[in-house]
Image 1: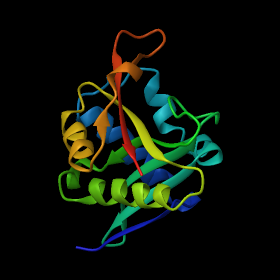
Image 2 (image 1 turned 135 degrees about the horizontal axis):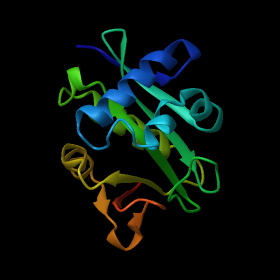
Image 3 (image 1 turned 90 degrees about the horizontal axis):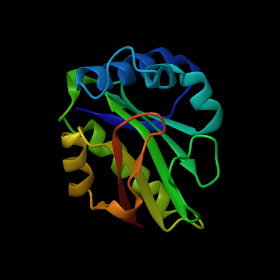
Image 4 (image 1 turned 90 degrees about the vertical axis):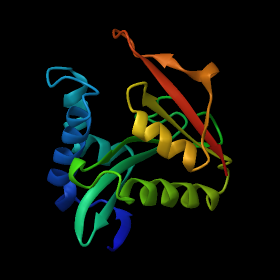
Length: 164
């Protein structure tokens, strides 16, 4: 098994769109008619406004995540000095096989070597129990005082943070 982490290219967009949609729907985190699905599928906009990364497993795109910083269009919770990653999605066919962990660890390593960044932050739906276990095992801590509710929705997003 060979995992490669790299910046996404336009050729990856269809795979990223499919994987992200399937990960959120397969995990029953949202319903197909939820307006957030359209945002998840809008890979072109995400690539314009974030650093969009992919993880390849044996040469095939198997996961992606978007990196953003305080004050940028895709930022939900990052404050100055934090790198935030969003929309981490692993193909359901390979979940729990190390791809997500490799991508998270690569993001943390990247943040550690980036001037002015002292922590990595993220939000996660409360239903994403496997993701929570991954984040905690990678050294992230819950920051409940920063949890927030999605405007117009009735669910809370949990905040996790790791000092680098």
